[in-house]
Image 1 (cartoon, protein in one colour):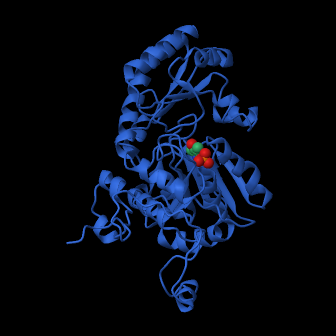
Image 2: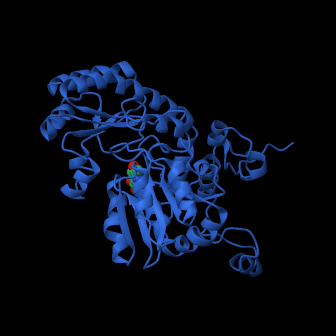
Image 3: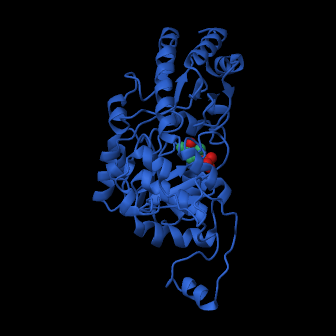
Length: 407
Ligand SMILES: *Cc1c(COP(=O)(O)O)cnc(C)c1O
């Protein structure tokens, strides 16, 4: 009997998450290759004129141009959709291409968006600067206060847009509450799931409508390529996202799709191992901070204001990223970063390497002091992505750097 291909939805639907991550979407050519094939082609040829006419008319299956379909990209899309529990997915050139497409494909002048104030810097730029330029009203709220979502709704509210856990303050949104509220008002929820990924949190199970990803982070997991994805119902992807995407072209290259396919094979293992290491490192650092008047922001630790909710929404681990605030402001944060010998100073996340950064002077520098203050991105805040190195080496490095910074 022929082995199931990962493109057969009925056959793959019962696969457990780790199996989906390794085999989902695998679509073998006539050569029977083990690893996914890399189709570096922009176009396709046809045996006769009627074949291509039928494809353009939508009356026959088949590829016509890589802005519309590509076999390697299609494998990634099917794998991500399967892992997310979504009917459909379209890959994007980067996480920001995914966010922009997920919003602009469905918004028009006169619509209103409610967005979380704690967000990736460029996500805030979309909400604060890009959408208003096109006559789309926006309101930013404290996403961790349920009542602020209710209070911000207007008759023209079309979309709720948020991350959970959020960058870089690790705010946790109550997915069930916010998605139920949105449904009751006919509002579409767009969730940026980059910090958790489907390995740790599946927002569709809590009632979310659209999941937008930076696959650059945990999905690639090894800091190699920029990539993104948007997942949702078949109707949303085909009828709302696709007309926007095929005519504006934020497409992912087949090569980058292939790299992410390889990354996904180990996502389940990495996400859990990095979550465990982040929890241990958080436990190691927290007493040092508390003694000096600092503050830990880690959804996996009981000191987080929404720890119980975070562990309910992410039962398999709360992710590799956490942040903490040093009482001595920027000078102390820089002293800590400069004393690191193993851990790299880097603003990337989700990588197998442990990386640390100072959001106020990097990822959140452009948004201005007022927005930073509102979001809780203080001068003493540092963010860490915990990788796959030996935990004892990481503890030694952090121990040395914390001491050098006077903690
Ligand atoms: C990195 C990131 C993005 C943007 O993704 P790119 O791939 O860098 O374009 C969006 N949202 C969150 C939460 C991120 O961490």
